[in-house]
Amino acid sequence: MFDFETILLEQRGAVAVLTINRPDKLNALNKQVHLESVAALDKLRHDETVRVLVITGSGNKAFIAGADIAEFAEQTPIGQRNFFYERTLFNTIDSFPKPVIAMINGFCLGGGNELALACDIRIASETAKFSQPEINLGIMPGGGGTQRLARLIGEGRAMELCLTGDMIDAETALRFGLVNYVFPPDELEGGTMKIAEKIAEKAPIALQLTKEAVKFAAKSNLDEGLRREVDLFALCFSTEDKEEGVRAFLEKRKPNFKGR
Ligand code: COA
Image (cartoon, rainbow, N blue to C red; front, side, top):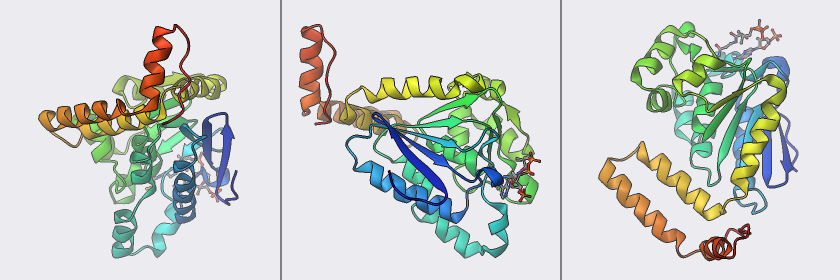
């Protein structure tokens, strides 16, 4: 679709697949990967033919083995702070107006796990391994690893992962609720695409508003959240897709949603 150096972007029907493509460095996230991925998401955001995004890593060993440690030497405290305060890849995924699925095909460490946490659904291979290993480098997570992880799997488990830096396997990640599904390696892609395609058939505006409402649950108290939900629910009633969905049900046929 577009030319990038550190990522691959392809489209399969209504599903776009973004692959972090530095297999010799276990797809470590350097600045170029961040910037190219944000640029890719900016293009996909406006592409009406793309309804779901899948993010994965190249090769069969790693999803993403974390931030590129080789770049740490040249980074200053204020530079790091400014970079992460700007529109990071993690926050761009979090607020992306279409569902994003992390297809986790191996090591999912540090910034890799933070990227997966920013996605809406995580699907892993049986061979995947997860950790927040920053503590082993004398630092701590800086891209949501303490915040999104604690909200997803609870404070106790997040605390243990961040304090020990220990790696957990895919079965443990499933038990913790860190991932939604675990597939054998050769079924990961098929299983993920099936879920992506199922979501891609739904009404795009309703998907966007649903994602916004669910994400808001972590940011609000229940009263504010319920009010936001009903406002977004009401907004769905202004769409052509709501008319189509209701009409299709009454006519006993599959709806054809157009994103309007
Ligand atoms: N940043 C930069 N380079 C990385 C990297 C990272 N986060 N993770 C792996 N690499 C590079 C290695 O330096 C090596 O490069 P080289 O071949 O030029 O020496 C290559 O990727 C392969 O990694 P290697 O360590 O040889 O593979 P392994 O199978 O022995 O170990 C890991 C795999 C994931 C256990 C190990 O690479 C590792 O611990 N990586 C760092 C993970 C981490 O701390 N991430 C959080 C950063 S905040």
